[in-house]
Amino acid sequence: MTDPSRSALLPIASSARVRAAVGALLRQHPGRTAAVAVLFLAASALGIVMPACLGRIVDAVSTDAGFPTIAGWVAGAGAGAIGAAVVMLWATRVLTGLVQDMLASLREDVFASAMRLPVSSVDDGESADLLSRVTGDVDAVAEAGGNVAPTLLSAGFAIAVSVAALTALDPWLALAGLASAPCYILGTRAFLRRSRVVFREVRVREAARSQAVLEAVEGIETLTAFNEQEHALERVRERAEGSIRKQIEGVRLTNRLFRWINGGELVGLAAILATGFLLQSAGAITVGMVTTAALLFHRLFGPVGQLIFGLDDIQRATIGLARLVGVIDLAPQPSEPATADAAPAASTGIEVRDVTFRYPTTGRGISEVTLTVDPGTTAALVGSSGSGKSTLARVIAGHHPPTSGSVHLAAGTADPYYLSQELHHFRGTIADNLRLVAPEASHDEMVAVLHAVGAAWAVEAMAAEGGADAAQHPSDAPAVPLDEGRIQQLAVARALLADPAVVILDEATADVGLHHRDAVEDAITALRQGRTALLIAHRLQQASTAEQIVVFADGRATQRGTHEELLATDGPYRRSWLAQTRSTPDHLTPNPTPNPTRTQHESGETETP
Image (cartoon, rainbow, N blue to C red):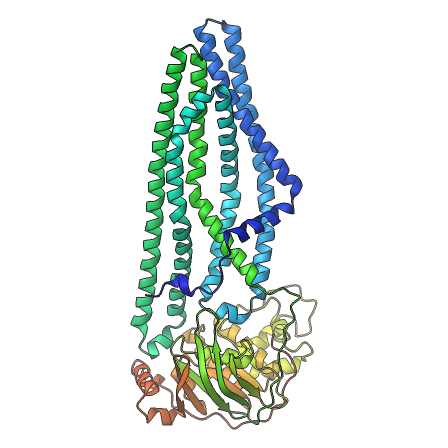
């Protein structure tokens, strides 16, 4: 089994880089940062008032000092407790505001960087990696910043002030308390040595598991067509088991840490009480001082436990920060210009010459692919998930520059119009959605493309919205509910309105339900008429209508020909076709027919949105 952490695309920032990023965020708020430090220090100092007063009360009682003296120390203990609570509340409020502002800046940087990532960087590996970073990692950092940071910061100051107070009370008592240090240090070092690696692996394996599930669900029809369901399920099972094993390992690490902490508390308190007994017996200190020392050390139990137990959250937040900073560092700066060399025009619609493209991290891609698509015809690319068909489509679309070889389009041809399987509906009316590609389109032109794709319902909806030119229409919502089939019909109509010479259809019906599929496929057929089309098909029935079919496996074209030629040849296409049609009722199995006669279209100049 391949370790998913070894094939993850996006980098993880180093600890030094994470510290630099956090420091840069803190430097944006110097005043509040200083105020947080001062307030937490004051709250911790007020926190030791109660143990000190309780020790004085013990001495007052043992010496019969009288009720007024005892009452004064009781009042002092109460005032210290109230003051510590008030100042701590103030400090927490200031810190929460600071952390939220820092998180807001971090979120903006991460999402802006994610939007600037080159398509090839996102596709190099697994899309769930980026998804897990901008969701799970952002949430982990936000939770740590909002809930864990105040607790851990107060614990850190409380420990420092309590140790200083214990030392001032009596150095021998402070040294006795240090007997607990070896337990804390050994346990913490053992935890840190393994936990960073384990928790990082947990995040990576969770992303890998999500990716396997995502691919299995989205590619179910392709997997079924090529009889790879068991392979996909096995991949999900292996990655899920790997994720669970790492999570169990993390729980075991945390449990071992708990045992070390409990042992340190026992050793330290016993050492302070024993030392205090000896010192008090020698007359060096009073019983009240021993009581204060024991209370100060006992006061450390909570902060030390919070600090060490919080290492789990610290580790998760640190890993999350490292993964988020990795996204920020990977993204190019907005000022970086994108340049591209103009390729010589092809004499055909699309000409691919010995194209190789490899993702830089995973090494996946395509190798030495040659393809010619005549103007006005359709070439269908088929194959299992990861075979390279979508990668070739993205190279032709210009999303990825080829590592070697070249891609040429016919003279005067603009960039191909790329229509993917993702469903995109934008805010506004149906007319607003259509005019994204043709802002000057007339009402009649929009009605024409809607009728061409069989979306008469959209024509009626435009009228209900107040007409195509009703800019004053107050509602951002369409007049009719839009399901996935209608959204994709509008996407095809938008492509038709753009009137491109070359269109790439990358599994455009994959996310469309069965009850909408026929309507969307009819719309795609209308879009293909008279255009050079590259069709990535997850169902072989779609591919059967193309003039040319190319079968991909392991990044190479292994078969090519017409539907009839490939059926007449024993090979993966014929076997997949038979496997797929055997599970399809006879009356649903299509009778492949060639595309309708080509009609003339002028190439539109509108850019793809």
